[in-house]
Image (cartoon, rainbow, N blue to C red; front, top):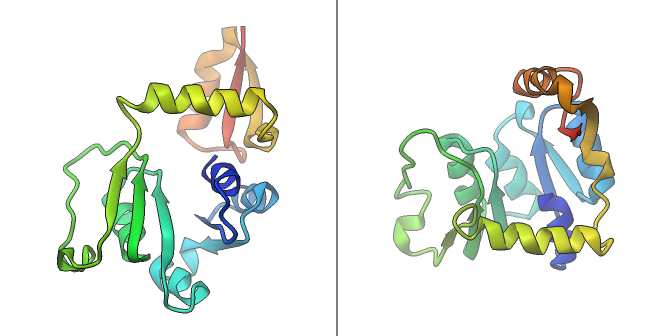
Amino acid sequence: MSIEMGSLKGATTIIGVDAVTERMDVARRLGATHVVNFKDGSVVEQIMALTDGRGVDVSIEALGTQGTFESALRVLRPGGRLSSLGVYSSDLRIPLDAFAAGLGDYSIVSTLCPGGKERMRRLMAVVQGGGVDLSPLVTHRFKLDDIEAAYELFAHQRDGVMKVAITP
């Protein structure tokens, strides 16, 4: 979704990060101009190399871990914005060096809740209007009666699962 929304917002360079081949392929199909495999070494170094050391205008952290948050912060150009969508299960720390000791003019925006309802309303309007094609994200479909199997599949990230559609 971040790739699709980046395209709609006018991004010309979109860098996806993953290590699962199927997810990397979908990222490319959705418009990522580059896909970084985090198993190939430092994500920060790879992204900085792709941007000739400049960094990115916007980074989106959607996983909700300290490590991904720090990486998203470290790849920002001066004056860049980090959009934090992840849900963190422990205290989140902002390391002083990654924050450029406050001199980097960074913005950190938490955009999940409570503004999530309005964000979701806008997103659904874009989908309804045909502005994005989300079909590549839905890899599995289940009937409502099989919802436990759907959650089990998704929780264990098996069989190339990305998103699961539940049909009543």
